[in-house]
Structures are given as C-alpha cells and as structure tokens.
Image (cartoon, rainbow, N blue to C red; front, side, top):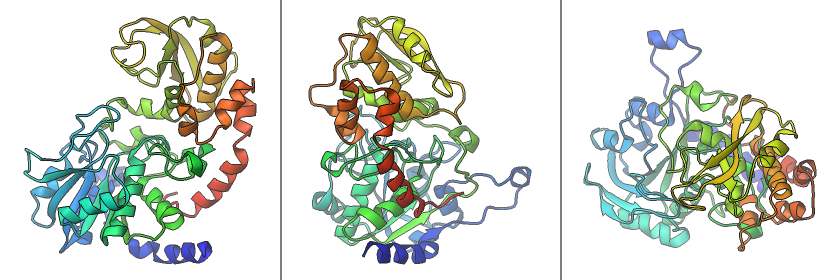
Amino acid sequence: MRLSRRALLAATTAAASFTAAPPATAAGRDRRKPLRTGFENLEASAYAPLRGQRVGIVTNPTGVTRDVRHIVDVMHADPHVELTAVFGPEHGFRGTAQAGGSEGRYDDPATGLPVYDTYLKSGQPLADVFTTAGVDTIVFDIQDAGARFYTYIWTLYDCMEAAQLAGRRFVVLDRPNPVTGRAAQGPVLHKEFATFVGRQPISQAHGMTVCELARLFNGEFLSAPVPLENVLMTGWKRAEFYDASALPWVPPSPNMPTPDTALVYSGTCMFEGTNLSEGRGTTRPFELLGADGIDGRWAAAANELHLPGVHFREAYFAPTFSKFQGKTVGGVQIHVDDRAAYDPVRTGIALLVTAKQVWSDFAWRPDNWIDKLTGSTHVRTAIDAGASTDEVVAGWQEELTAFRRIRKEYLLYK
C-alpha cells in the first residue's frame, strides 16, 4: 500500500509543484541563478495557483518579501488574489508572544483581515477553524529553522491534516532551510513520544525544506493525503547556508535572532531538557549554555574532544528571564568556525556528556522533557549510564539510515 501511494505521489509531483520562470535581468545574468522564494514565484505568476479561490494564509513575521514587506500586506493589496483570512501559529501572526504562547483571535489592524489562532489546535477543531473562516485554499509560508522540535513544521502538519478533514486545498510556499539541506542528522522520533515538538518519526535535524516536508507528510504520515500544491524556490542549492540566499533574516521566534542561532539549535535545544540554561534571556540563546557553579572545566573538557568545526569558550552571563534569571552563571559559548564540518546534534550530545562529567549538580528536567526533544529514552538513559558521545550517537544510526532512505524520495532540490 505504501509503495503504491508513493508511486502515485511521485507521478503527480510535476503537476503539484509550481515555479515561475525568473525574468531576464542584468542581476540575474551576473549570478548562477538568483534565489527566488516560493512567494516570489507565486507573485510573479499573478497568483495563478490561487485564481478563483478564497484564500487563507498560515504565516508569521517571517512571511516577508526581500524588501521586508509582509506578504499579507502585499497580497491584501493585490487584485489578482482574494485573501480573506490569516492563521497565526505559536508566537502569533505578528510575533508578539513568547514561547508557549499565541495571540488569539483578532482583526489585523493593518488590513482588517480576521486572524485566527492555530496554536495547540489540530484535527477536527482546527478543521472547524478553516470552515468558520470560509476559505477554499490554505497557504503556508513560514521560515523554518531545520530542527524537528521547532514547532512550525508541526503547524504545517496539523494544518495539512485539518485541511484534508475540511475538504480544502493546501498550498505551501517554499523558503530555504537556513542550515542547508544536507543529510539528515540525529535520533529519529519514536511514535510513543509524539508531542507538538515532534508529531512523526523524522530525524532531529531533518535537512529538508517545508515543501519537501509537506510531500513527506502527505506520502508517509497523513491518514489520507490533502490536495497539495508546492510553490518551489528557484536557484536554491542544498549545500547553501542562509547567508547565500541574500534574503533578509526575520527572527522566526523571539529566541531565534540570527541564522547562527539556527545553526546550533538542533543540538543545543536539548538543554531545555536539563537544569542548565540554554541561553534564553541573553543576546545569544542556544549559543550560550550554563548554570550556577559551572566554571572553565566544562569548556576545557569539550575542547579536548576536538569536535569538527567548533570550539568552546569559557563564558559567564546573567539571563534576563527564564532559568537563572538575574543571576550570573558560568558555562560555554559555542563558536562554529567550519560550518560544513560542524555536526550540531553530535556537538549537543558531547556538551551534555561533558556537562554531566564536570558539574555534580547536572540533572534532567523532572518531566523527562529530554525524551520528548530527542524522541526516545535513549539519549537520557545512555548518558546516565556513562556512555561516551560516540556510544550515544551510535545508538540511533540504524533508525537514521532508514529515515534517510525514506527522506530521499521526497527531496525536490539538488
């Protein structure tokens, strides 16, 4: 059954993916091929895939043009498209809420459009939101950070499922994976640990774009596929980091201020599952890690591992909120000096192992949140048993290899 479904999806990929040919410009002739986002290709087509449809869009502050106009404002002013509703994810459509929050239901002051809250909604309740909004097609355009536990990809999944239940079309506008589309890395989620930081069994660093993930979700995980159309990027290469795109970076969430944050996030977000600070409340979240009582021994122990592409600096900081608010703590700052060689998940495991070795007060969060983040009990129990970094990483390789085989069938870019 799965093979026939995959074959059907593969056969319809060309019809279900849309790009617009870029105009011949002097700038275009100077480069290999200028990167254009899914939205740029959609706009260039005068919104051809949305003609005659009442459109609702799932987006947030990252849904911008390269001159940083919000796409909702652009679409609302364009007579070629009938935009009738906006759907906000975690942190909200305009991005005013912190982690674990949203903006609720309101009318957008700039456009007058109704804004509906999708956060923590799924299944039939979310389908009912789409029905209430009266839309024919739901569009998704949010910048991802490349990690399984970054919740926007599960907003994508939940909205696809709800659109199928509500009998709506679904259109995904692609943007770059900021940390490249290289091979998947890290442990694969076990279904019994599914939460909003991981609905389905994908790897911790997935190395996919949102259009590729949408195809994967449709082909592997949804009980019935949604009518799906992807509006692809042009000019993006899998090996490119975000700065190669020449696109502006808008923080996808309050603690993702730069592409450098995204680079380390799929590894150091695991510290949310410990009693150490993951750097929230500093200007370098997820790059600064620490706790009360840690000193230079941690940076020294981490540097002794000679991990590829990264060095660690002894650091002291006082978070303005979250763990250790207002208290000076010691720890490390991560300095990536070779992005191509750097493995964020392996580095995160090495930092957990060495933190436990040098700091006697190291502890997991009492709710074992680390198991939700990593997708199983393996990381926690292996580290507690004294496993080395290599031993911990070896424990997920078989599942990762299997996921990579599945993932390969849904990739859209070279």
